[in-house]
Image (tube, rainbow, N blue to C red):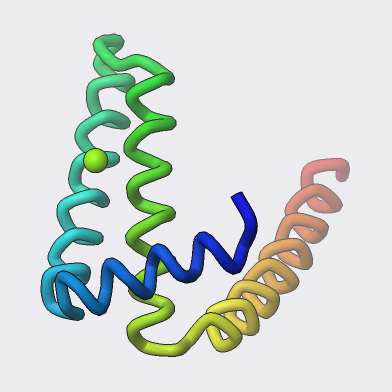
Length: 98
Ligand SMILES: [Mg+2]
């Protein structure tokens, strides 16, 4: 799907259901993903269900970023955290090699 079309669908959902409803939805979807991951850890899960719930979480998280208009700020935080994590991993690997 085109990015513009995807963003329009998120905007329509937020306009129709409202900010509060979509904030509740992301919480619900995160808990559904949590449940599927827990089931998988008990050998009762399936990858299709995990993928389905992950898609729901990504869709609702995108709406949260839109509601708060924080898409760029989130990307900046991700970039910082990934660089920091990468640096830590290099240290850990170097220490393991000793
Ligand atoms: Mg779901």
